[in-house]
Image (cartoon, rainbow, N blue to C red):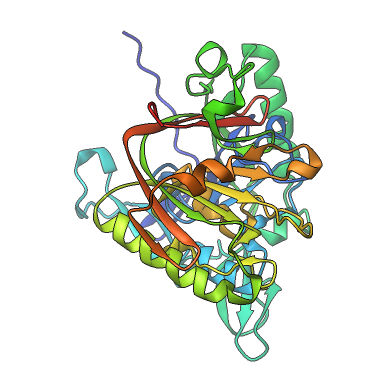
Length: 391
């Protein structure tokens, strides 16, 4: 048995000790949106200790190769909803703060504490309620939001460049996609910056290779197939489908469709039944003429989502950009289908012929005794959804 001792990266601020920021970078990204690709990788960073990242708290995700493409910050509303609001630090005063011995007296603090410590300026921006805008830096009055703009936009520390070099070197050394944990202490007074390379390990792509081989499949066995899929792995516990009938859908009534989808989502979530959601146009579109204007909490029970193009006019697919943060956090499969562009198909006729448990307008809930089977291979961006056996 071997024991490795590592010095914690960070700085003491009164009774608190923490790095300026920390995070995880992976050389494979299951949810890339153009211009990113699966092999470009993805990083997640947060102010303070890394527990915010590893415990699934609010943090910033970005691709080291495209550090300015921040889908989770596509609008001011997205920034306010997804920004980090507290950070983790070690308490040095010897007073227990709960959480057990494994938490090493970790405690959480608000962003006002980080600003007083002088650690917020390097990672934050300011929201001005007067004109509903976000400005880089802390020179204005207003709410503080953690955007990492000083680094990713203005380069005060070459974070993206360092992470890009590390994941490529790691892949070359291990011969496999990698995951790297790190922490950073920025320069202050006479002390130089410190990039703490904490840990590297192979990134296991869940059940990839043989078990996720799709190959040639009889189209009659499939509800849906796509060559533009976000997500990876198998899902085999779906017995329900909520589908927007493409033949009866009217864009002028998309608000009604959104309310019907929300009704079925609430019903299935209350029954703890994850489901497959199939619709036309963009899910979550701000323009009701281009899709179905749902909020995330109105489709949050969906385990797999299909976004299919209209029959009469082409809409640029969103690939889940409206819900990017939630898709990645909950590992939801996202299928984009546009037959005219060679991006898969949906068996609309089969869906229309299945008896519905309940209908509201053109939205139908289907239920099956046998489960649907979903296979997604992130290496080739392909996925298939098999019909239940006997159907």
